[in-house]
Length: 340
Ligand code: HEC
Ligand SMILES: [Cu+2]
Image 1 (cartoon, rainbow, N blue to C red):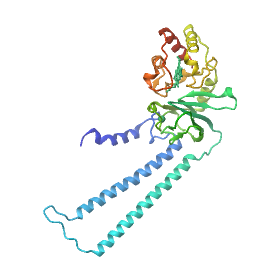
Image 2: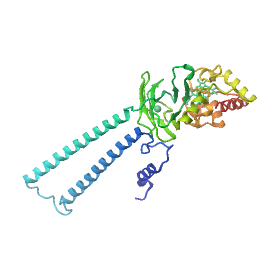
Image 3: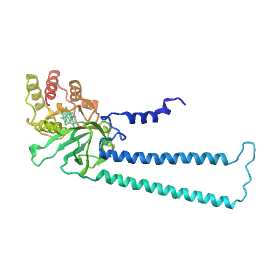
């Protein structure tokens, strides 16, 4: 009775009530979209709870009335037309109530869907999110090519501003899910769709791919950094700049290593010769909190470990191992860490 197992649901609920923003939780909405979904969740929860209680009561009273006593033979059933009629009515009304309840839940789901979809305000920020095995390419399209920002796995958005997300996938179906923000959205290869959200509390909200997409599906996280408009604009201005010039001999050597190894075949660093979009854009890689789709913190040690043997960290990832000499690696990490 007193096992930890019994209390797991209780602990889950208690946690749900106390989490601060930054965690991700369907019961901790930070956007009206997620608020609508939470509302539907609780309505369904209490309906099902009532059904559960009614079932237990009906079951217990039937058991109490059955009159079968251990040392008696089974009671002889007499024909009881009045009782039969009452039982038929009981069953018919139970079926009726069930159908009405299910219908009610259906209507509420449709209404919630409509409320989540409807874009009401103007002047949204538009973001293009492209799923890759196993990371998220994020870009802020602009009619002028040199005003387009491209980053990975960390989505900056202004608060109290509608954000329209255009989706696409480079390979298989992925699903974008930030539980505190809105419902799941599939990213389909070769098919662009759109949805929107608006966050009202500043914070960092975590999300995760929610559609099995291969070996490293579990290591395909992302975060949404919701910040006041002026901070968002400052971030945008910073991201628009080409990569910072190396300011030390180590960093200069690191750039040389980057440009003379395989890195430039897969990555972009704007302002250098590296211009491939196969992997994440690294122009401002040092401005991100995490790397490899929220798999590692963005520290010197993690960067070095990732560069030398990404296959050990995310087996199957599209990035090949890079056996570099120790001092080349050191310089490369210094350079990458300077790219704010
Ligand atoms: C064959 C293509 C390829 C080559 C070569 C390659 N990378 Fe990558 N790199 C990738 C891909 C794909 C990812 C995303 C992997 C993931 O998150 O699952 C990545 C991720 C990264 C990241 C993490 C970025 C982020 O924001 O999450 C860094 C840093 C990085 N690579 C640096 C390098 C360096 C330095 C080199 C050269 C020594 C290099 N890469 C060579 C394809 C490549
Ligand atoms: Cu996935």
